Structure formats: structure tokens, C-alpha cells
Image 1 (tube, rainbow, N blue to C red):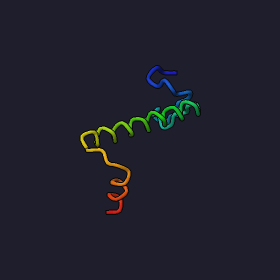
Image 2: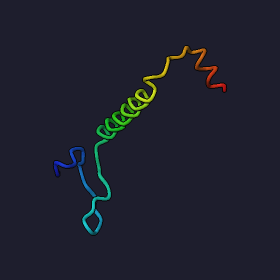
Image 3: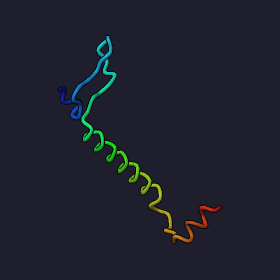
Length: 65
């Protein structure tokens, strides 16, 4: 398999040879999902890093407004 696609077990191409689908193992798929979730959490943490933390009660009250 091409080194440009380290997780790929199989590449499916169209009639022009363009890659249209990639087959990966379920374990690799789950790992990639976890990495995406971690990245999204990191981005959310970066957005709020300069905000003052709230207590649980303050947060619930804020959600009501």
C-alpha cells in the first residue's frame, strides 16, 4: 500500500484512477474517531481558556437565560 495512506488497507478508485473510497480496519477507524474527538475538545478548551470558571450553579443559571 502507498505510504501516503498509512491506515488504508485498500483504495477504491473510479475509472479515471481517482481515489473515491478508502477501506481501513475498524480499530483504526475507532482510533481516528478518538483523535478527532480529542482535537475538538482541545479546540473547545482553547476557545474558553481566557474565561473565568463558573460554579455548577452559575453555569446552570446561565443555561436558563
